[in-house]
Amino acid sequence: MEIETYQLPNGLTVLVESMPWLESAAFSLLVPSGCGYEAANRAGLASLTCEMTQRGAGSRDSRAFMQDLELLGAEFSSAVSSSHASFGASMPAENLLATLALYADLARRPHLDADQLDDARLSCLQEVRAVEDDLAQKCLLLLRSRYYADPLGRASHGTEAGLAAIKRKDVVNHFKSTYVPQDAILSVAGKIDVLELRRHIEQLFGDWSGPAPVHPQEIPPPRGYEHLARESTQTHIGVAYDSVAYADPQFYEARAAVGILSDGMSSRLFTEVREKRGLCYSVYASCHSLRDRGSVMCYAGTSTERAQETLDVVVAELLRLTRGVDADEVRRLQSRLKSALIMQQESSASRAGAMAADWYYLGRVLTLDELGRIVAGLSVEKIDAYLASHPPRELTVVTLGSSPLTVQTSVGPEIR
Image (cartoon, rainbow, N blue to C red; front, top):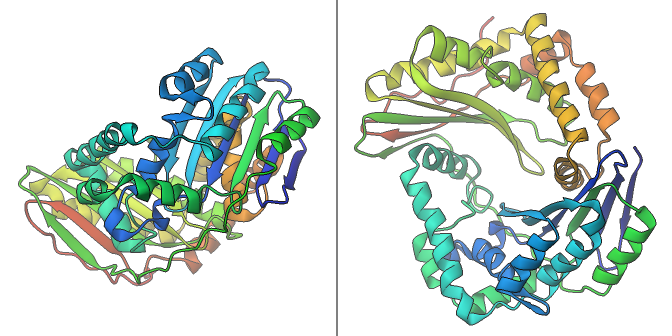
């Protein structure tokens, strides 16, 4: 299907794809209010502001806002990354315009009431404490912060100290400086009257204004190895190394290679580390991308006694991948990716989210047909060529458990 793309004079980018075979519609709204824009001593400000915007906006107080979303049959969500605060909702197609009006109030006219601040802060603190209790997630967050550094590797939920320090004026100032149309993205997909939707969006957002966001400065990442001591019978292992960003022409070859390594029960990590050797209860790898750089991030959770062997075998599998893949692995991976594309065609919410992400990373939207051709065009030769030119060289490693491990961070290209 054709995707309509346009930008309002205030800088808001709008993406629309009609999916007339559906009875639903969905949108994703991204505003440049990620945790990368908050001060280091106010860690958690972006998440707290995101929470506060949903506690009353426009003519509705907090209760009325949520009740009206429920009456519209909207399933809604929000999240904060290093770059954006994102809001998404899906609903019966006939309720799209009314739901968009609610979110226009959220993005432009939230109450940010002082009497909601403590409850919102408590909600954010619960997330911080939940991460402290989830050692696997804590390991991966530490890995990301060590690999990307501040602010790109910052944890979006913040810290207890940062959240405790935040005053209402901090929330108001963060909102005014980052909930702005410049660099914001609104994507809509589903059963849509495109012309009516365009008029509605211009009415809701056309006079939205605000200063362009100030992009944060980066601190060079430390990389290398870090161990976080915890008294535990388990050890959590995180490994990261350089890959290509989503915008790179070879991204899908990189994605395919990692899929062969980690997607499904027939993947190499699952088969070799878990099934054959019984080393761990969980092991996987995934591609991670920022706008201008990418990585492969791996995780394994194992017992203290088998932690060193688990790390050694995981690294060995990462290096063995550079020797190449086989045709059966590629066919299995293509089947999984095709299935994901089919599911996206049946979900307005998935499609709206994917469109917004495409625009942010690529400056354009890949059509489902284009994605299908990319997946069908994957081959042993293309993936092997990518692996030959992008072998793991320097590893960033984080372990969390009772004892540190022996780690070789400089691995160099695999000797064939």
